[in-house]
Image 1 (cartoon, helix red, strand yellow):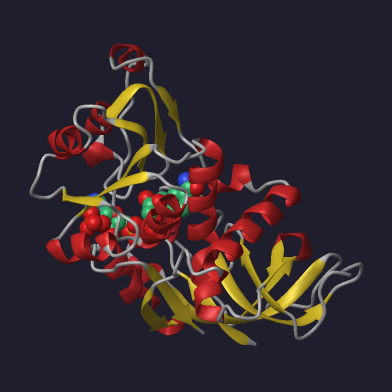
Image 2 (cartoon, rainbow, N blue to C red):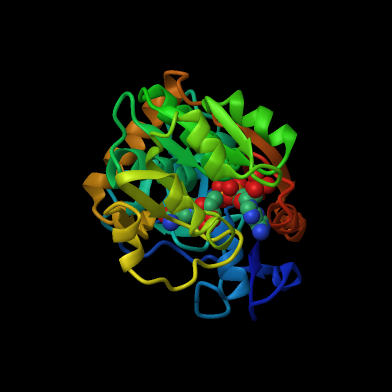
Length: 323
Ligand SMILES: NC(=O)c1ccc[n+]([C@@H]2O[C@H](COP(=O)([O-])OP(=O)(O)OC[C@H]3O[C@@H](n4cnc5c(N)ncnc54)[C@H](OP(=O)(O)O)[C@@H]3O)[C@@H](O)[C@H]2O)c1
């Protein structure tokens, strides 16, 4: 038996229960991983509250890193002792877990477990937003909300590396400064300033080629007003609540805009794309262009406190849970 966090009914942080758990032996195509670090994500909150549905009881957690303990029949790419990381819908909040071998990637030697655990879901999200949803070119102007967050600090540095002019928003003066130190050229405190007029001033009225918006309710529809004609609105989360239903004619009125609601799992469903995402991510981290800021670490048993802090806007960068 090992320890794991299980959710039996959805609700507040108190539904995250530490329990004994038997991960079982790896079946065909599976790998048993001893987890060294687990990444915390806002998506974990959506599953815990029931906004995203999962069959109960379930073990939450979408990213982690560890060492291979055992492999099942037919697994040829991994062996006991290998350092691996993954981004999988659930099951990460545990000391040990089974994982399908075709969803694991090898961690390069220079990258510690904490960073690997905290960068898979968030870093591959930054990858698909910048390289697939709206492929950013040198000179593009981009806006990213919640710039000091987990995805935010990675995306800001990566967008800068790609040659974009990077504008962010953040919810306190400290967060504004942190985002400025991680790729963002301009950061607007959107709790104090009107971000649409600030973007207009920063861009000299040109506005942005793309807005990556994971805040949702509170920044909609103002985010659309930050786009130039034919710009792209990528709505990829709802930290403040869901974007309300809207008339698609709004996109015509605001300049023939493109709007998409992407999720990482569609972009990495094919193994080839998972490999590309991981390679590009590890490459920008190993080159030093993107630094993974593990700014909070909690014992796995204190996961409820970690959820409260993430929901309460008290975290910055990446947060990990240590089993
Ligand atoms: N679709 C996908 O594929 C995908 C993948 C990964 C993540 N996501 C989404 O991306 C977002 C960022 O994820 P993350 O794990 O890196 O989280 P995060 O950005 O570290 O945390 C969320 C941030 O949102 C901001 N926020 C604004 N209004 C808020 C409110 N009412 N309550 C709480 N936070 C609020 C806060 O920053 P300020 O204080 O600066 O406002 C907070 O720190 C989440 O919405 C997540 O669901 C989507």
